[in-house]
Length: 115
Length: 117
Image (cartoon, rainbow over all chains, first blue to last red; front, top):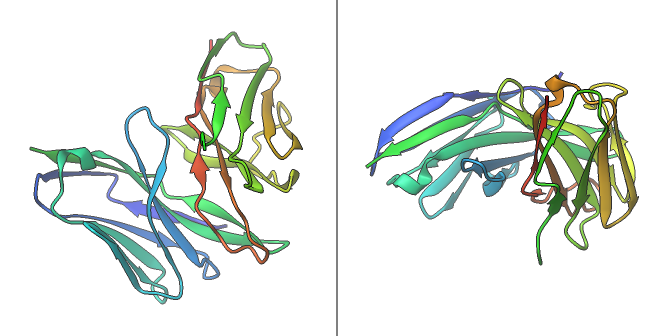
């Protein structure tokens, strides 16, 4: 069945360094790939998303790249700050009958940014 | 807009009791999702409604779980009878789904933390 694998499960960086989180997906029909940030005790919130018709998208310190051939996509955070500390989830859309899509989430990456 | 509203925010109950979780999606959104989050299993989709109709309930664990959406502004997730393994954070999310399944952002509610003793 559909599956999204996310690595690493934990990531520790020094403030100012870059952080990279990688995800692979199994469904070649997936065409939408959002990334969510979840702070401790809070709800997941979308930080960036990418669709299959582009290979890269950037928003200030955050960028996402997509390789459809290899079925993997990555989140890049540059110049990390302590407030970037959170759990990050990748997701991939999975189409099913009726023309609908649902999101399959990765297991999450706990990012810790140390001052 | 107040965003997705869920109630209660916390629920502690005893095994065997009925639990009802409530959700009000963002006005104008036509898709509603119930998720369960645990350390062991991560974020799991339980059920997906579109225009108040259940589209996919393949994630509902078993017959003890049921969900309804009587109108566009209200949904419930019921567990009867509850068991300790149901302890988790339950999130409701909503989005605007355009014909053809074009995906837009899912907005999550604050969640309900359920503890079954």
